[in-house]
Length: 398
Image (tube, rainbow, N blue to C red; front, side, top):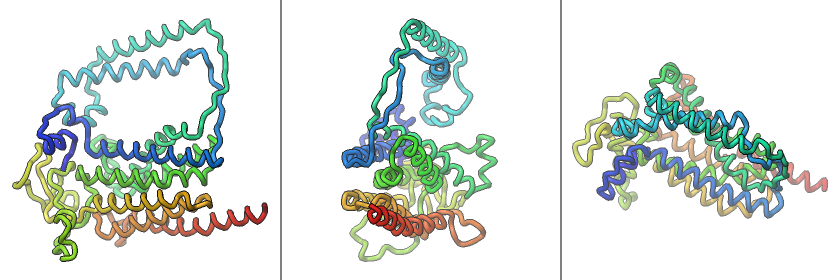
């Protein structure tokens, strides 16, 4: 496994680039997921705009370029953060590259340089504002094409998705709440996919309504991109070994699967990023790595080996993305494609939960993901009939 890109480049190419330790493998693939989702979403919104489903919107903008007081203060704040944290790269480089998240959210930094940089940004912003003081506040109607909203949609989806994923994870693991508030647990560790999906969906729909993007067409446009983004994200889970693996697999690989590598059947996730020993967190059933590379700080592997469920989900969801992408132009009723996505998503996750490590809820032999995935499948099935019915009614009335 490769906790960050340093180990990936070192293992594959023999290169030791210390700065790459900052780039976490999971975060790198999350970034790729956003890029892939942005591209497919932009493509779909552009296609639907050509079909007449989305229309440009207009807003009034000032043309003098004068910054507001809020913009000046925000620039000054950015300057402080830059000056406060940047010196750490020169004074404590080894710690920064090995602990980028802790460095970012810690109170460590150079206060004097932070203040100086903040004042420099503030003076520059004030000088720029003064140069525009006597300029006229002319206004102009600016046309915004529908695909120009993609950046905002992705950003809102990311922020609300991470927030929702964390909330659902804490609901599923209430024992971690205390650790979250006292700072012993990272905000970015422990995220529940369905919490992110639900929060992001509501946020994007509200944004679409506000910006004249018809919700039914918008969710259809987003369906393939969400599936693609999830698949790429799961590749990151597998590459980094972030704990999204399956239960212990001590079964012999069936003869009909002998053409596949053994790790696709059962994998021990050496050098996994969370450094645990067994299928269940905190389990002592693992061992230190004795065969193969051993990364400092991550030198553990699971014992017994487990089902590589993150890898399975990546492959399955890439296939499901391909299906959604192929049928999207053949479906004329808005809302149907998103309903099919919900059914695909629900069925895939429900089945993978049977061999995936997860917390049981309500004292029953059931996981939070199984409950939500069942609901999403039922919602998608309902959507097939609902959207078809209202479409037929609209055609009948016309």
